[in-house]
Amino acid sequence: MTIDINGLFGKYVDFIPRYREFVSCLDSGLARVLRVNLFRMKVEKVVKRLSRYGIVVEGIGWYPGALLVKYGIDVASRCLEHYLGFYYIMDLVSLVPPYLILKEGGEEVLLDVAAAPGGKALALADGMVGRGLVVANEPNRERFNALASNVDRMGYPNVLLLRVDARRLPRLPGVSMVLFDAPCSTEIHFDRIRDIGPYLDGSIYRRYSRLQIEILGRLYEVLDPGTPVYYTVCTLNPMECEYVVSQSLRIGYEVEEIKDIPLEYCRGVEKWGGFDFSDVAHYCVRIYPHLNEGYGCNIGFSFLCKLVR
Image 1 (cartoon, helix red, strand yellow):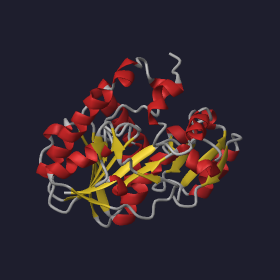
Image 2: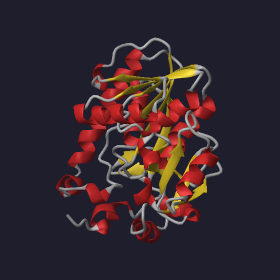
Image 3: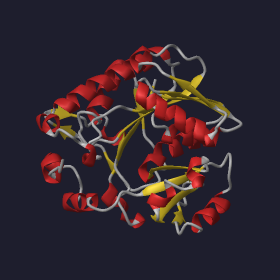
C-alpha cells in the first residue's frame, strides 16, 4: 500500500520544525547501524572483515562499537559475520536510549519491558557484561521467538528472557532501571502501514495510549521508589507521547530532564487537540531525522522522556 506522507503527517505541520524538510528527509534511505558485539569481537577486526565484502562503514563518535553503514547494508545482513553474532543491525536513533541508560548505570539489573526484536536490550547487555543483568521481556509469542533467536545468536551471558504481559508484571526485586520502548502506532515506519484508516480517525493513537498508560501503572506498582523509567516511542502523535507523560504524573511518577543527548532534538509539544502539556513539554525530547542531516540519511524519529517512580 502506498501511503500519502502529507496525508499521514500533515496534521503535525504546526509543531514539526521545518516541516517540508522533514517530509523530504523521509524519502531518503533509513540509516542503518552495525552495533559490534564487543563481548565477541573488536571493532577493528569487524571493519576489516566487512571490507572484504565491499561494505563501507563509518564510526559513530558518541557510541563506541557503532558503525554507520555507508554502502552494502544488504550484504551485511547476509554475510557470515552477521550469523555469527559479531554485530546487530539497527536504526541509528535506536542507539540513543541504551546510550543514555548505560551512561547513568552501574552494577545493576536493567529491565526492558517490551524488548523484541532485541536491539536495545542487547545493546544494554553489551555494556553490562561483567557488571549487571538485563531482563528482556516480550509478551507476544512470535516476537518473543525473534528476541530469543537474537539473544542466542549474539551470545551475551547476562540476558534473562521473560514472557509476561507487562500489565501483569510480577514484582522484580533489584531492578534499578527500566527501558519502556512502548508498543505504539509506529507511524514513522509508514512503509509498514497496511490500513491508514485508524491513523486518520485517530483510533490507533487512543488505543496505544491507553495500553501504554496501563503498563506504566503496573510498573509503578512493582518498582521501588526512585527507579528511573526511560519511556520511548517511534510515533509523532502527542496522544502517545506528551499525553502519556502527563498521565504518568497522575499515576505518581515524577519527570526529570534528560541531559547529554547525542543528537539534535526539540523539546516536547505544549498544546495539542485541546490538551495542555506545558507542564511536561520541557522534559520531553523529540529527535527528528531532518535535524540530523550530518549523517547523510534518515536516522529515524524517537520520542523520549525520563520518568522516575
